Length: 354
Image (cartoon, rainbow, N blue to C red; front, side, top):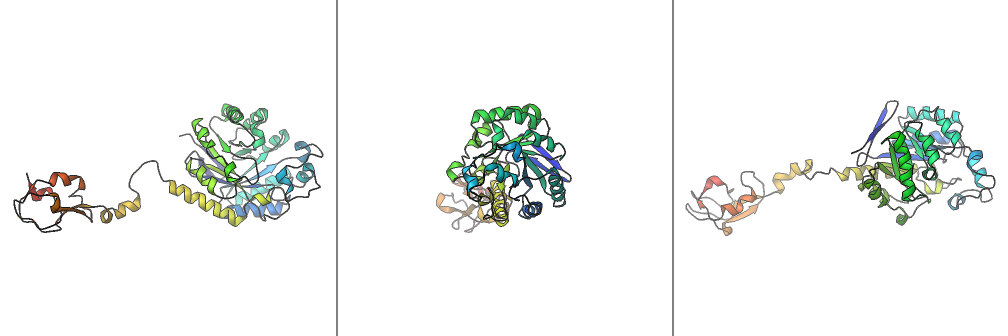
């Protein structure tokens, strides 16, 4: 099974299908341009159990044309008269901010990363020395951008919203060329929030068949889709986190509060524990309960010496004793007792003869 390890300072984590889930708290732009809010969200993400925090680095001047309308979901919690460029301008962070936030994340012992949006943003990443990079869904259909991103030689997690399978395969091929197997394909539906029906978790079967390492960029409203993704082997999960769902900004209303995020993490980790192994064998608790729950062969009545044992003479009862396996029951029938034997005696070969 393919896997790779990401490292940052004293932290390390092995990424691979069906391995322990790696959970990313997507802070994105939910800091509202405030470095203090960003630090609060890093700290709360760590307390909630996230393995990593992720931001977005962009310049509104480079990302959108003037007077570009907002996407439908961006209108809900923002100034309706404001265009997309002006909205994003308020949410930018500087390179010095990212250096400060990365340093803060180090003190909290949590992985730190970001999503670049344009060519200059990729250049900025060269000075951050990140453990992994996140490519947004828009980049899945942008081969040249993915090529530049892969040339940083850092593992890439690629979201696949707004893309068909052919675009996903092309994107993966570009990443594979430079990064070999050090990338993750994330099933994603670019809607905020996405309906349960829109999560489309069965696509992970396609990713599995294509031998990808895969995960789930989760914009759904509960944990159902995430648990289904987990059951199909997804190993990376990304979910938005916010200080306040009612705050002004494009992503707050479709994000989880810190308490909700903690519940999300607990649920995924419990789900991972429930998956167990691929080998059918006794669990530790079953081994403890084995003798009291399994059964062996006992006499159902008193029998005399030379009595030929019939089915009516025997019963299958608890507790279990390895000296009288149930598989021997048919062999006992028709054999003769070599001495008088009392009811409820464990029936063993040494009490019988042919």
